[in-house]
Image (cartoon, rainbow, N blue to C red; front, side, top):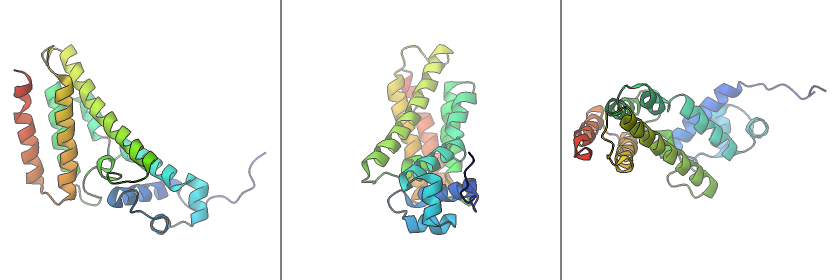
Length: 198
């Protein structure tokens, strides 16, 4: 039997996007329910009915980020023809993306729950960051399979370094670094590439 409840009077997708931007800018703990309802332009009952809880809303916002604004890393790691080109495109592309006007600086996955005391949210975001590192590691393994990296290269060390560099770009962007600052970090990281091949 169809539900007789009142239809939603708001655009759920648009409200979720507003929540994503707010969480991205302020982080999970510094975003209150009052902030969310004001930004999303819905009442608390509508928010709970549509999303379940603040944490559930946050998880959906993170998924939206990964599928939209945060999708560059996964895309270039898949599309670029060599491991080196993929890592370079990841660093340089995100360095530019992290400073894009009209949205918060840096990466939501890095910044939204770094100092969070909520155990399940903290663990959830740590898992997302580990997933990012694993994407880098798998792309380097593919480089070995494609013969553009030597078979004995330490992919774990390389993945750790380049993923840490990516996360540092996000922190620098949030701290007000310029495009030139971020480019210099990417330049230095790519200059280190050959040290892993010796």
